[in-house]
Amino acid sequence: MNNLDWQHWQYFLHIAQAGSLNRAADALGVSQPTLSRHLHTLEQQLGQTLFDRSTQGLSPTRFGQSLIEEAEQMRTSAQRLERLAAGQDQAVTGRVRLSANEPIALHYLPRILPDFMDDNPALSVEVEVTNKATSLDKRDADIAIRMFPPQQPDLIARHLFDIPLGFFASARYFARHGNPTSADALLTHRLLGYDRDKQFENGAADLGWSIRNEDFYFRTDSMSLHLEMACHGGGIVGTHKQLATSLGLLPVEVEITLPSLPLYLCCHRDVKHNRRIRLLMDFLADRLDCF
Image (cartoon, rainbow, N blue to C red; front, side, top):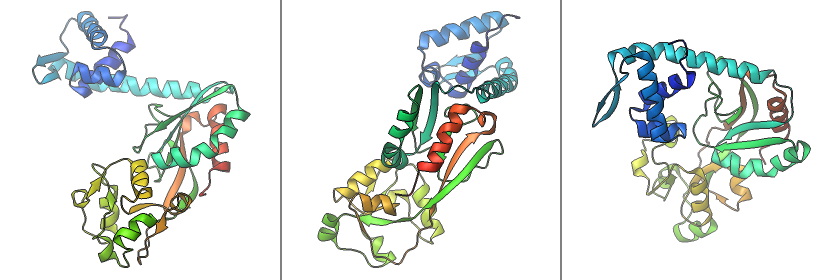
């Protein structure tokens, strides 16, 4: 019992959350036999079974359930210890990991990151492209570029600027379908919407529109595909004004004022003194702009 490996407990928590060895193995990036072997070792050391097996997957036994809360506290402490250690690192070698959504990653960062890499050749830059909020607590990223103010008290956020939004389409689309001149007319056009992501639904509700994702003729959660479709005459997209103009898209002439999108740089307070993270944070704050 005194030689229990912390990795066993990490795997135990992932299995409990996933409800299946295969799903947990995929999330951890390990093979299913490796994960099964760790679980078997932990159960042997504890002398009790942690999960009930069934055709529906794995569910914690009463004994296993009684250990989850303490194991989660261990994981939280381990993550904080890792952040605190990283926060004291003053080296400008190694890696720094940045999280950004598709438009920022594909259209903003490529214009500026080469300069950062030239100035810091010993520093490896990793970019996670995701339209979901990356966990800074778990160090899935060191820095996150976000379009909403963080609510977590442990995060440090720097508001850089606001991005004006609007509706845009290509000249090809307007030639075939016309340019709507009212909000009601806009809703009859081929709007490029989201699939599972509810951000358009929620934004529309704020404007007094009753529109659901199912109402769109074209749906995808990929913002990059929205832009590509719009550029090739696929429909009308709601996006960054300066970005749309740079891609040759034309504004939809409707009397609708979309709220601007705030852009924040975020990191965890435990790593704010890490030199690598601070270098990239300061660079992004200085060089990121709204075109």
